[in-house]
Image (cartoon, rainbow, N blue to C red; front, side):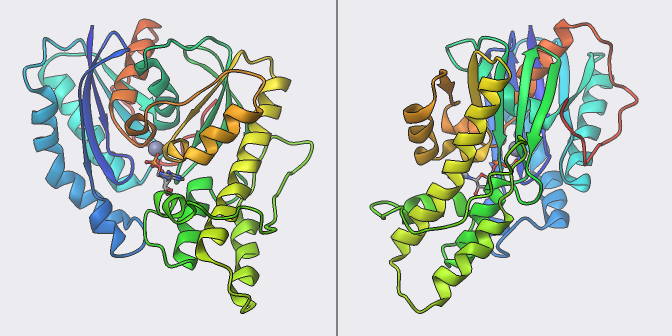
Length: 321
Ligand code: KG4
Ligand code: ZN
């Protein structure tokens, strides 16, 4: 069964075709990062207009010589309203014109399904950490279509913290990869605050950015590599500790990490060192936004036979679970 996936939730225009929820036939992503980098972050109105320009060429490339499709799936939230509308309306038009089933996909569930695109099929229940520029969520996935939210960030997402810290350090946008590069060879032991929020699976990263300011201002001339490495370590320490806690307290068999921040090497290494459960990461190109993950999620949703979503509207603040 060949499923088309479309994602225009933020700043990547993405279309993919996936077979049986697991095998990528095409996975095309047009990134707008260079355009938004000038402003130090995503400008929503610019993103919508850019999706309009990029979507049809990206669709054409992704369809290529694809076999007969069995369904159209599209991210309907969470995301930027104007950006979501572009993908949703294309998906409705295509499904109507070609008489195909139409399903709306939660972008956060999509990130989790990046794991089904890898060689090893995950075992359930699994504790999922979805960690990106917009989200930091701890979710127990009991089965396909059955998600329980255990905790989430109360303020900044972890990727957002990377982006803000990179701006304070003048390292450019997006901040995650910039901090990771700057941190190479740095000493990660400068004392930066960690918010543990004991007794809850929620997370918080806004204090860490504030904690960085005195380190930068005291005139105590720390090497940028040491500051970047210590910041990265503080985020990673909290993410890894809280994820393992949530996994052990919920009876999960595995930990599945996804979203843009899952590309981070220190995060991967620290999970490998500390976790008593197996931890999996999608390959880096499937960690960041793409539509193959949406098509994979759509395949399993379609298999559940829960009906179609012809009357759906965008849901910019959609939650998971
Ligand atoms: O999943 P994604 O592409 O888009 C959203 O849905 O947000 O994630 C982008 C976020 C950005 O905040 C970026 O700084 C962060 O992921 N990121 C990283 C790394 N690569 C991307 N953070 C830390 N280390 C990385 N290597
Ligand atoms: Zn995302």
